[in-house]
Length: 140
Image (tube, rainbow, N blue to C red):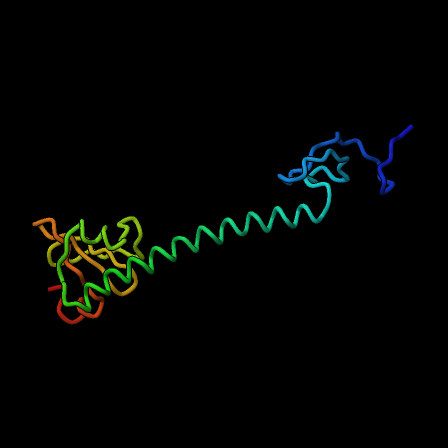
């Protein structure tokens, strides 16, 4: 005699546990790729996964905004050079920038966060730059 599931389909699949973390209920899958015992658990698991991705992006964007704010604050105060310690104490994270340019004149890398950036000077200080300055003055 052939075993039929609740939907009347022939079912030769082994029972499995629901993949939704808060459930774990054992169920008889109707399809070979069914991982959740019900549609609601699938939706909640997908929403949780999407939220995790959104939160990661939000954290990166937040740090980029903070980095830009630090550079803008120094720029507006006419502080065109600073130290590593000062950048870090103001909340700058050197691991976050939007783009890197190579300065043709002295072959140095310029690290930018949107429109503000910096370059490392030979004396281990950081020169604060603005994108408009690069176009007009060729990076001092």
